[in-house]
Image (cartoon, rainbow, N blue to C red):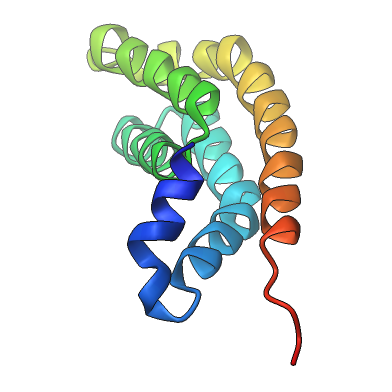
Length: 123
């Protein structure tokens, strides 16, 4: 599992892996909102930046399905939206955001559960 690997790699850094996962969970609504705003306003650069941030952070914590959805949207943005983002991007919001938001909600629960299971005992 990606989280186990992240935990092992960062284990000597005093719980840095935990902070990383907690930050992913905490910032996921902000990332989703930023993506929504940039798509609905036709902001090509903002949409591309937002979807890349979502994809990369999702990959880092092992949220593969969410990363895949972000990848699909990124591909569509790059292939179809550059010439007329004001017309195309709002349509992408309608087509992609419901799945991304649903997957985001389904992702946070297992991540939080993983964090809770890995809590160090209080001494």
